[in-house]
Length: 344
Image (cartoon, rainbow, N blue to C red):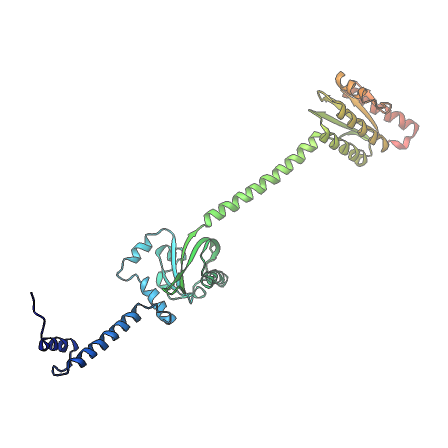
């Protein structure tokens, strides 16, 4: 069992601890001095642990710059190994560090970028765009992801980048800079623009094709002065009948026609609804002073016309196109003998 130290030994120990305190100083004074020193050390320790909210911005920027310093730390190799472009900026919009991909993209060396602001590097419109985007991030303190920005170099080359930017904060939570990861999307944007152009061209071609098909579905052929022929092929429905009536009426007006020969040889079947539309078209042509001649009608089509219950008095029904043309030419000549001014 150890014996307790006597007063001389304790005094020597306290003296050594207090440094310059004389050995002959009373014990009470030595203890008081020791307690004061312990309190000072505790206060310094508490201050060291307290968040440094009042650290000047310049010092924080220096800390950020030192944190991202690449000298001898291996950070340069790590950043340069990233295929995407990476940059760091302080709160004053100065570049703190960029990787090789970023510098290569803008055809500059890193030392031409670090320490400078965008307006010192890029053309004005690009610099303004970058600054406005970055200021939003650092002012709001909120990341901005998948932001498309336009870039342009002094040699006229340009393109698009896709940026993902996040603010960087100090220990107190204050934004002191930002980090950006950038991908060049110029090739993708130009591919998209090319695809949009191709789509636009295809839609235009489709529109022209539909117009051609519509014209072919109701062709109006002037075969002689005052005589039109409309050869129809395929299925007739309500929509096509409406186009047929429009084509017939416009043709009569445009060509000052007296006879319109509607050739149904290529139409396999006409139902009651279509038959009614044809009869209304014939009546409309009659109101313009022209006569309609229906040729090439099948037995089933004839039955559909009869079953409509409409009057067929204005209709001239002939077997085929040759008979219809002969009828129209003969009638024109007959009318010309009565009124010679009718012939050109």
